[in-house]
Image 1 (tube, rainbow, N blue to C red):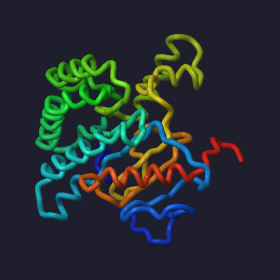
Image 2: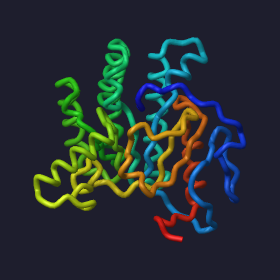
Image 3: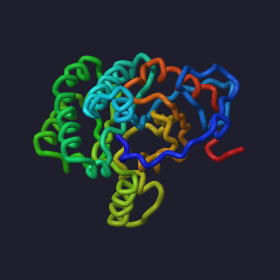
Image 4: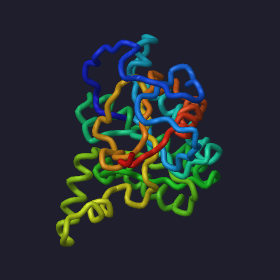
Length: 262
């Protein structure tokens, strides 16, 4: 999940958010960047900033912990759709390096959910040919979680579809680390830095989605999103469904990606 949010600036419906010609977005889905095109395109790699668990719980007068639990259910719904929706890779922002600043009891609850998720969902990953990939410094987590993750990585290594989970991840730290490793090898170039990113073996990022209505990247995949399309939706993460993802993919298919060209 992204770092704890700052106070949000209110915006009017006419500000920045725009919908190009093509299919009308589903309720709660907003499009803000990227030109439209009649030429269809397939997104191979989609990344999601899963935001809004706390606000989902607050609106229902429930503990934040319940919001996080419902957020895990939303993850499960989408993971089942990786292959049906034609994705090669789905990357989820689960725990940022800044999330350590949260209250200790909340962190403990999140780590408990991670443990349960690995145990309960690993058989489904294997059965559905999903390969788990960890993005971030996961070895700084508790030893038992590290052991569970490494077992899951090994047991899913032959999967053809990738679920990449960002754990203890921060993009600025990732780029700094990659540049330092590149410098140790010799010349520091775009290519040498890219080789040392956590995502070096993943497909290029096509589409980045953020839920909850916040419009920022929160130190997530800054390098990788240089030419990615972006969609920001007001839907809170626990309410996010495969239908929302399908609509986002339809919007992506309508865009013309120029990669800096005319």
